[in-house]
Image 1 (cartoon, rainbow, N blue to C red):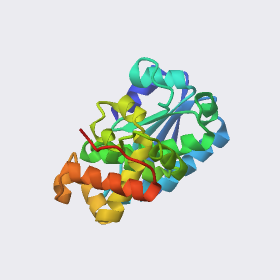
Image 2 (image 1 turned 90 degrees about the vertical axis):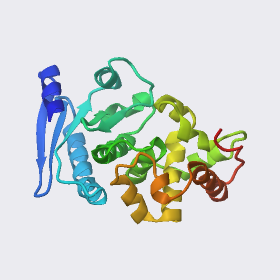
Image 3 (image 1 turned 135 degrees about the horizontal axis):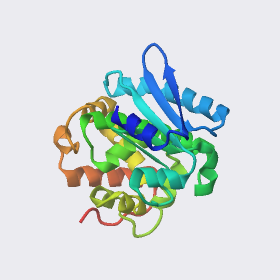
Image 4 (image 1 turned 180 degrees about the horizontal axis):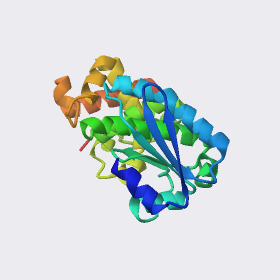
Length: 247
């Protein structure tokens, strides 16, 4: 894959290569030479544990995924964006593979070691979803949070119980920063919960392996109806007060 060539040329003195091969998958891991061996083992086990489960859900062929572990957040930001980014950005995934910070430096950006392990799976989900084209953000992020088991119900409750909130706005966020500011990375998990409870997991899978950007046509519902039904469900499930829906 082209990304492998790019990164080995960019950091030849810093990057080691480890090929993780079992009888079903091949994964290449690129990391700083100072990465702790126990961390390398944890990452390896984490990836292999989840790879086949995700491949089956997304009906994906066997694919090689490059995984890049950066020694700190600054070098990660400079590589993926060419500039420093919001502090919450610690991982990125898609057609170019998975790029995350070393779990051992997570505390410097308000995260934990385990958080980064979950981020690795979150970004792996994006690798698979991108095989079929980009999806509407609340569902694309929601399915990644769902498989990475990143949702904390208390975080959802804290958001929902605030006054003057409008969860439906996450569907119209202009970019990832506005999406984050609106609580999108918390709410989007609940969009997946609502989807499964209302339409079933088989329909969810059908959406993600289709070329549809948004699920509404596939489900035979209007966007505003889907969003308002989700908001009603959110209120009933997590409590709180919700303002008028999307405008």
